[in-house]
Image 1: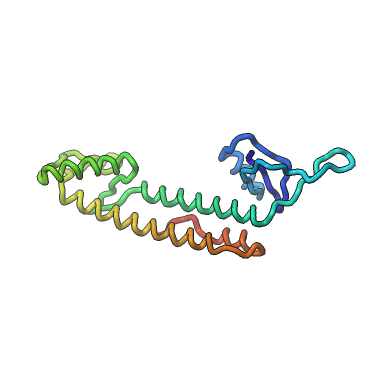
Image 2 (image 1 turned 180 degrees about the horizontal axis):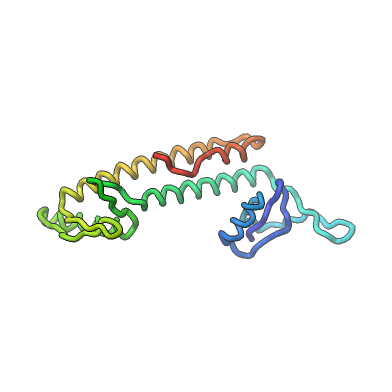
Length: 181
């Protein structure tokens, strides 16, 4: 169950499914949400109300690290799919575009003179796609992916290096999930 934590303690608020709207709402309240199946109450007070237990620091840290790595992964995907600029023209690099580039590569491998006169670069921009332009786009995509993969690896290493329970949450907060390369 998606379980809400505030100030290192379970709050008693739980959801049977993991929805981004729940997480966003609780993030705005300063809460942390983790997927947790276990018992969250230690015991009940004299009025029968549950007394919620503290969350083990290592559990909070592990969850925060996983969340940070997921955010880094999402940032990498966004950059990967945001396009590249070649000859002052923006070219799509989302999954559909990447499949089209692979298909084009197969055709020019069989016929190096193969050309598509009206290749959709991005938006309403069309170009004549030939082997030379494809090679420049491919090189730009490889450079972009090399940079963003290195960034992801470095950010994940910074996440993995966080170990001191006393400062872990602050340290993780300082690790950027925005690619600036």
